[in-house]
Length: 252
Image (cartoon, rainbow, N blue to C red):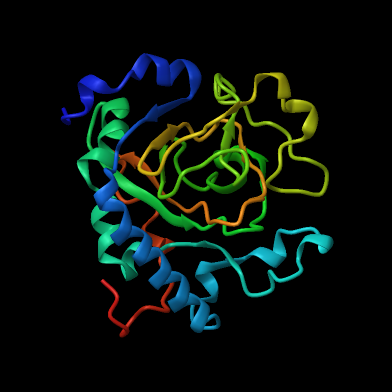
């Protein structure tokens, strides 16, 4: 069992669908990760055609009256570990991966990795379940570890969750004309819990948990590195997520 096993409240995770783990990354580890986030953002931004398969642009997720000045702002980079040794190493850092291994009760494999930027003016992530909108082609034995690289609050678009919304593995209906957002009548706003965390903290959550983040209304980024894991007994079930754009260019 991993060294964090005794600190992970597995019963609470199973009951509420998420856990908060404080101080996963101490302050001295954050500057190199933020510098790497800057490097990747610049790399992708300077070669948008080459890395098109990895980039989400903010203008595609903002209302028309919110797009001023956001034309070249990146929303998300995915995947990144094949281009980033530091983020590849972090994916299996005991402090990050330990809670997922403790909850599964076994070793894990990396299923997905992405860098959410949430730069000033950055768009909302509407209420959704990761399993329903994104992962149905794969296993639902998944746990996401969402590590804040900067402080997160309601002003800059912290994650918000509805505890216990994962119970029974519901496949909630989508909003009309949308294949991501859950229909509003299935979102009980009286139960919303904002996840206000400091840089270096982590939230771990279930793929059926309802979650959301608002637009970044501050003047500072709210960047996060996000890793999702599956039990190692299932193998590398999402290895095909890597595009071919990196080959011959120093990829891992």
